[in-house]
Length: 266
Image (cartoon, rainbow, N blue to C red; front, side, top):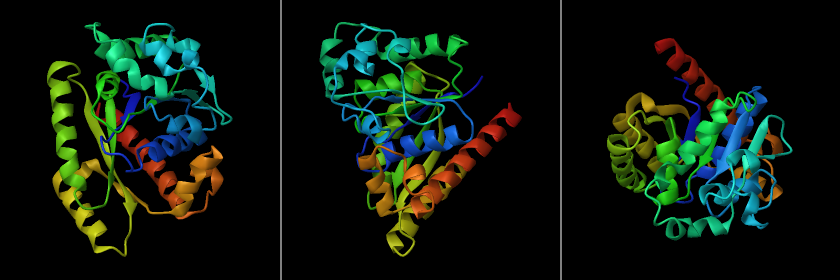
């Protein structure tokens, strides 16, 4: 079965999660892949980072889909980038957990909606990429239940690996109870500074623990990565020659090569 639905997840904020969503989506679209990004973070940073507004009416956001008012096909928006569509988010999404408290199937709502899209031959997305919120909330559970595979950005800083323990426990719990085929596709090292001994130590620990799940490329600390979102464009377009862009182009290549290996193994 195709591993089409990929969540980018880490319950810790500020690790390069949304940056990875935006630039993997952009990189894949430049490789002629048709991509749908779903912003599942109430902060709406993937929304603004791809040039759309996170302050308009919630009617056409993922919130309206998850509370049952709209079908996901009704809220998909085009971005200014070819082959890259987006379902936006805003702060109203943060109220969903309380509002859906009486719905016993709420954890499956996103999965059910995405199944409708994937069964619609007209949509034909190569990948659906979900930006998860930086917490282990209902929204994260919805993403884990809906996903085929996960990419975990891991900042190469102190306590980074300890922070992953809780996430791994959550993933195992979801696999046991709600989504047995869920897998970690890979760990992407972010905010890497080769001059810093700590970065090298965290990389060594991560590779020792996760083995070949850790991508070869590490995304460096790079000011251009921080600047690009305020311009509403991926760094791959904002400054395609900066170190951050070069890393995300290489990550996109590695991601696609991994896909070929998965297909060959199958």
